[in-house]
Length: 365
Picture 1 (cartoon, rainbow, N blue to C red):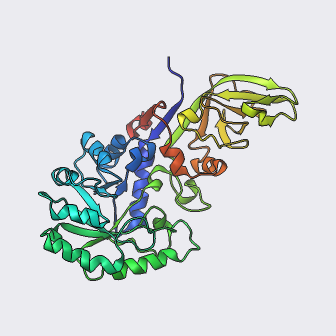
Picture 2 (picture 1 turned 120 degrees about the horizontal axis):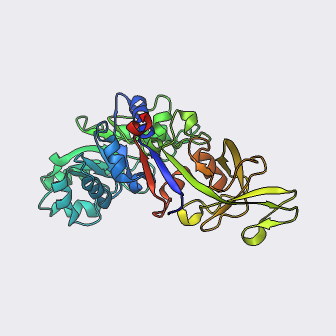
Picture 3 (picture 1 turned 180 degrees about the vertical axis):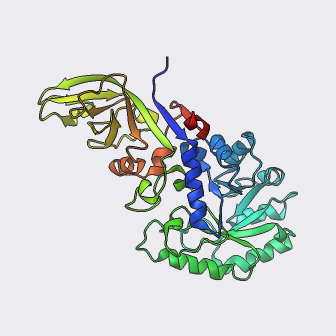
């Protein structure tokens, strides 16, 4: 019998979060960003869950787009990094994948392409990773016209660097640059809003927003958790207590004896570790939950197990389920204790942790 270390995925929570994104984006529509295996939730299952609501999906690369097709979903799929080979242009055209064009070498591929997919142009408004400078857009559009593919362009995209910080003025500056850069093509669509932008008062989200992390119930905003923003956790990460023992004062637990009991401490061992994707840097005092109580980690996280303080939970015993994050402990809290972000935790759960999907019908039953 396998161990009971699982990630439970709540489909109704996913749909709630997507519909909240739509409400916040209105009158813009929301394309659901489901890259990185649906932020660790399973790209096929996420695509199927949102297929009735989302007009488009967005992913990072063609492999992820193909996984959506393998799940039986025929929606348009936007490749946010475009393609990485000229050979993939024909696949995109055939499969209905929409390519973001962000660099000169991709334009060179389009000049000689036998088939051209639907195109979006990336505008660099200050993130400075990918995209064309605003002053280059006229030249880019002229090149595409010479290649007889300008009619394949459906819109422009940009990406915000600091939308998670309500005190930053940089999003306003990026919005201004983007608006001015694309003004000569008013009939083409515009997409700029990441998850964080949905929570900025008065922030334009143009025609299509791109909610990502918020769909999965984690916060895109600094100093806020998902529940504080009205989001529902989609993943609940659980594992079993496998052992309980009492440590005497002066006894340590785990590698390097990094935590030592100052008093008699009832300790539990939980069957999860960094080999499952739980963060190794989540140290002492990181919260968890068992038997109706919040508890804390003690000592170092190992590859396959971690230790928790059960002193305040005398009824906890081997076989009990421990929630590492979910409805009682926010993944944002765990990320803060681990010195990282919820994005990394959710996408980092490894393949040895089964995803168990709960649908609204399951809930009703």
